[in-house]
Length: 389
Image 1 (cartoon, one colour):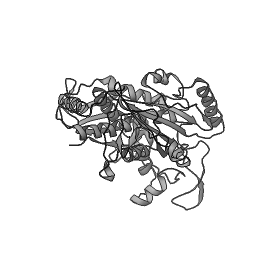
Image 2 (cartoon, rainbow, N blue to C red):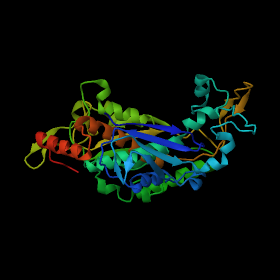
Image 3 (cartoon, one colour):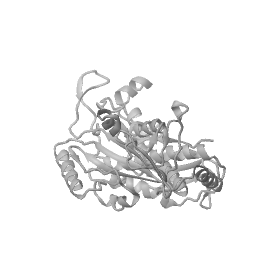
Image 4 (cartoon, rainbow, N blue to C red):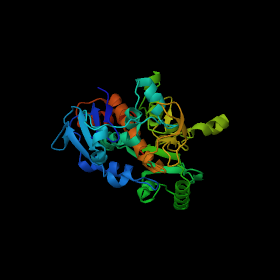
């Protein structure tokens, strides 16, 4: 069985649920494995008032006994503490009070297309599920996937490289140690000067009633070659990663490795030459491909850069149309953030981890984590792989 997950829940409903299916038995989990990333998801300069209300933690309610997975689906629940303020408006059951409908769709959000598709008259029936609050459930599921990957020697990390017009210097030789302290930056940026400039850019945007997007980079270290496949379109790892990362709310572009920059280079400057030595085996001196060739890992770090648009909920709303009257109106104004690029990087880690964990299990199989690890050792021995972590 392949690893897969599904989430359920609305932004201001009772809570969010994630179910992860296909995990091997015997994987040791702790609350910190999951809650650590839930807390990191709430980091970042530019977050709004809800972060003062929600202190997310996950209750693991199925698939675990005495701290180890059973091989059955794992279910996690993240409570929405703000639900107490929304109980009449978001109660799953009918309420006596009259609840006003929302008729003001926001440009850039799922509101208008969603009400047209599903036949709703109330935009809230769409926006509650379309909200990025759903990513808390993804991060909880991703914490489980990250724990599995750590058992297999793989680490997934992220950092912010651009907010608005401010771009940090980039490096193509990052190692896991370089990410130490990244969460201490208010924008999760590895460069101190750029971090300071990004904070100033967010402050200026907030004063101007604007929101900001940007770019984050997510990387996986310690991968063996050959994860993914070239034989079918839906097995190509770069395609799966791009789809998973693009599925995050407000993401508008994904580049693997040097990505779009490769389109303007000549061939000799676009590819990673292959070398061999007794000490390293096969290796590359560059990683322009972002660790993936032909839909499969090369053994170098898998690197993806993801572009996030500015959030569509603005404190000074854009022009829209009232769904009931068809008259011009200002779009819905709700509590919002000025910038969530730093948090989006944490969600990106979760999505990359879930895709990689699934691909590893498809490659290695195994009903118990010890079976998976034994299969990995046998594969490494067969290909003569020298681990580079």
